Amino acid sequence: MSKEVDFYDSGFGEFEKMMKEYAEKVSEEKALDAIEAGAQEFVNDLLRLPRPRSRITKAGYTHIIGTFALERTESNIKVGWGKYYGPMLEHGTRKMAARAHLKPLFEQNKEKYYKKMTECIFG
Image (cartoon, rainbow, N blue to C red; front, side, top):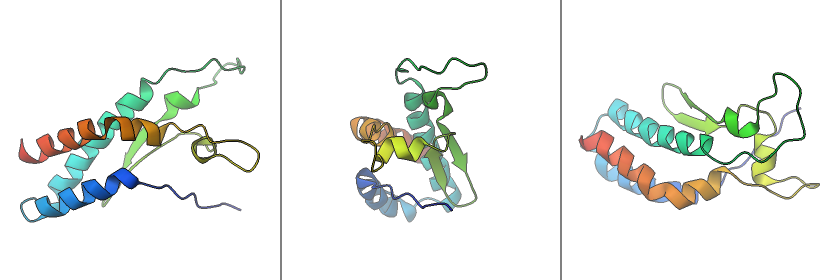
């Protein structure tokens, strides 16, 4: 039994408007490359977040911050966690308050990501 997680992407609305203006001038592949460049910059920033000390010390354990990754498919880019409980940390559960990573960092640095995408489009 799996549940779909909603992600509220307030900053992406502005980006979508900007991309529609550029769409007339840029191919779909080039636009996706630009989004990937911005998303990769976002992932790099996520990987630089401080890692709170974990009580788990067993061999092979990877902290959730070390699992942020980017996935590109034919038509979209996904940024997320490599651990199943990432969405639970981001949004919280009925037993745990949210401890967001993605949304605050994106909101703080979105202009930097937009600039990177624009540079990729227009060189």
